[in-house]
Structures are given as C-alpha cells and as structure tokens.
Length: 603
Image (cartoon, rainbow, N blue to C red):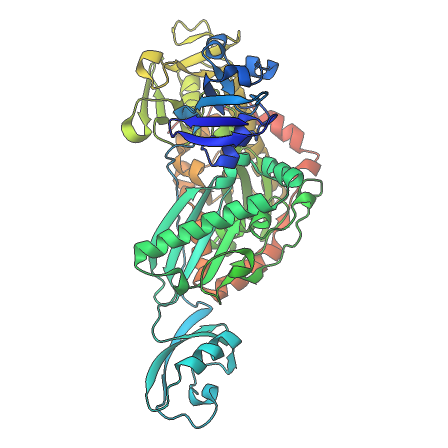
C-alpha cells in the first residue's frame, strides 16, 4: 500500500503503483493546476518531494528540460511525470504557484437592451372555500392556461381544503401550469460555462432584478486548460467525470446564490446556460468525439429545453434548462449570447466583436451580413505557455509599463509581492519594449541596448527581467523570455488573421468600422493602447473600442428574462456565416503577415 500526503493541507490519499502524483491529486481533490493536461509541456504542475523519494520514479528527460538542476536537486518534480513505483509513505508539498489560487474572475458584462418577457411567470389565484367541480376548473382565470402538469395537479389536490379559501401561487412555464405553492418568488439562474471560469446570476423572474452574482473556477481545469485537452480526456476516460464536475459546480454556485438572496433552490424554475460548443456538450453529457476531427460537427446546433434534474441539476423539480443555439463546432452559444448582449445584430454600420479567452471567437458585421470564426489563442494570453505566466490571482502582475531607461513599473493583484505575470501585463511589456527601442518589429530583444534587464538566460536565449528575485514571492527573477514574446506574437497573429479574413469576406475596411466590441476577461483587463501597438487590433480609433466584459454572461441573463430574445438568438445563429479558418487559403499568408509588430504609435 502507498500513502501520499499532500502538504500543507495534510490531505492523505491511497495511491496505486504506476499512478502519477497528478492523477492521485486529482482523484483526491487536491488543488494542482495542469494547463497541458499532463503532457509535460507547461511545467506548471510542480510539486516538491519531502519524504519518500525512493518510492517515486526518477526524473524524466521531459522534467529535466523544464525544471532547473537546482530545483531537481531540491526535490521538485512535475507531478504529471512523477510516478509511484514502490510501496511506502510519500509526502509532497504543493507550492502556491502550482495552485489555482484566488483568481480574479470577471463576471459583469454589459447588456445594451434588456427586455422583460420571461417564459416563467407567477399568477396569484384564489381557490374557493367550496369546490364542487374539478379543481383545475375551480381556479379558472383568464391569466391561467388550461394545461396543468401532473406535478402541479398533485400539489393542488393536496392543498384543496373544503371550507377554507386559499390564495395560491401558480407557476407557469410558457403555456403550462408547472407548480402550485402557497407563496413563491419564481427565480431563474443564468450561467456562463467558460473553459476557465463559471459565472452564475440569480434573477427574480418577476422584476428582472439580479439578486446575486457568483463565480468559480471551472473544476474541469484540472484536466487541462483548453478544450482540446478536455476532449482528449473525455475520449480516453469518458465524458461522465467532466460532466459531473461542471454540474456539481453549477449546483454549488446556485446554492450559494440562493443562500445569499435568502431563497431556496426550490424557487429556481428555469436556468439558461451558455458556453462554447465543447462546454455545451460536456454539460449535457453529449459525446464530444465528433468535435475532435474535421469538420468538427456538434451533435446538434439547435436550442434545447431539458428538465434540469435530467442532467443532475438540483433546482425545483419542474425547472427547465434552456441552452441557446450553437453556431459551429468551435463557436458556441456564448458567442450568440455576446451578440444578444451587445445588439450587434441590430447595428447598421460595420462592427467587429471579439471574445478573447482560452479560445477567441470573432464576429464581423458588414454588407448586411454576419460572419464568425474561431481561433486558438488563449493559452498564451492566459499564461499557460509563458515561463512566468499566470492568471489574475494574488501575486500576479496585471498591469506594467516599461520606462525609457528599461525599468518597469507594475501593479500586482492583492498588492502582494509578485510571483508571475498575467497575459494583459505581458502585452503591456511587449508594447513597452517596442516603444522604447528594446525590441524590434520582429519581436527580437535588443541585447546590445545597454540595459542589464536584457540578458541571455539559462536556455541560451535572450530574456527581459521584469523583477529581480529579491523583490518576488518565489525567490526567482521573473522574466519575459524571447520564447514568451514569440508565443504572444503567434497568438495575436491568429486573432488578427481571423479578423482580416472576415473583414475581407464582408468587404469591411478598418477605417469603416464603427465599433470594436471586446468581450471576455482577458480583453477587459487588456490595455487597448498596448493591444493596438502589438497589432492585436486593426487600425481602429481607440474611441471606437468598447470593452464589454463578460458579455456572454450578460447575454445569458438577458435570454433568461426574455422569450423574445431567445427567438432572436435562434434567428441570428441560423444567419451567421461560419468561416473555418483551417480551410481558408489566405489564412497562412494573413497569419505570417500579422506576426511582426506593426509599429502603431500610442495615442
């Protein structure tokens, strides 16, 4: 028998011979991030062996390529590669940089036009003291439909008390009475199921007021930060674990929101969930294997109504879950929600909507048409492929300025000592390096610039020192490497190429774009000047750039409150022209041309 103790919590778990420490941690609920889903690519899942080093495998070549000799000598290992090889007691310390931490999660977003015509409503009706006919006839009211669910009739039959007049709340979903209660405030729960985060909004369906907003890291992140890793895990291990993870998360968030509002999950009669196509399939326990291969076809693109309890959601027994339509294999209902929230479908002039996240979705409207595409970009922007990259957690540098002499001014989440850099700060630094002449248009650092912050690193390649080890929480210099710069260049080039292809298809020129809507957490915290400097955006006046935050969550909330908007969402999804960038002949050329820094001056 092998016992693994994870410190500092002291949580103990039984391990099997051959299991990796990451597998043991996941099974035991220990918080260890794994952005690359255990492929030894990211180097983020490091742990330190305190005791029992003879019970684990020797360091692999993959670990030696990622971890410095000093760290290996101190007992640090990649938990995805460190395997249990013999019986004994193993003690493992999980450092703070290997934990998800206290992320700063963006949940608020703008809705440009809200409507209040929910499909769930409440009607108060008096049940007479003496009922001579059928109960459903006794509560006849012009506001009540004639259809009653079995559940509502069962409850009504138990509430009837001959000789006592009662005023009851009848809960109606579309044209059917689904519940009868003595008193009730019908609630709804909108949820944005992001690859990284899950945001929930508890809403009073009568007044339209948002009662509570809650958020949490998507627990599926333990199985990889990108959708490809999630699909890979589902194909190998089955979809059920990932499905259960997200359903449990939604249940916990909904319970937390109801507690905060002084309500019960029994009062929740409807949910609206949006997300990319992979998140949609995992939520509904749909096999995602068709999304793994070209042409990346979803099981269905249609909007769905399902009983919430049928997939394990704990709300009222009669609660329905509505999932808006999908657009394509990698353009989901979250993009539809973005469009609903920003009213892009009603814009007269040319507009661009870009939702920058783990995947980036782009929508362009022009020439009376809508076109959309998706491109992989998020892992670099969100830190997974950056040496000292991290999400916006305590200790993360989230804003930075490179001064003329090469020094750096920065801001840190939680005003703590820095332990890494967010994607938005990386963009700031790259833009700053270019503007002060420490980096050229190709992204190459100038090693002869005369600043000690630019040096040749241990890998033999140039790097820029953002902060020295005596001022960091990790006891190491925090650097931005030449490889990091190239990762950002490749990610921004993919986004820019996608924009350019859609704009050309719809005959939209940058000078004609009336509005650029930037959605998503990364886009919200991004400095538009820095983004334009590195060429992430086309040559658009900054006054036309609008940061709309979590528009997907805002759109989900809007559709929760409006049956009309759900119909509009369905129409919009059918009209959008999906462009598969992989099959576009011009994509490679556009991509290569977008890699260099264009040299736009900050204004």
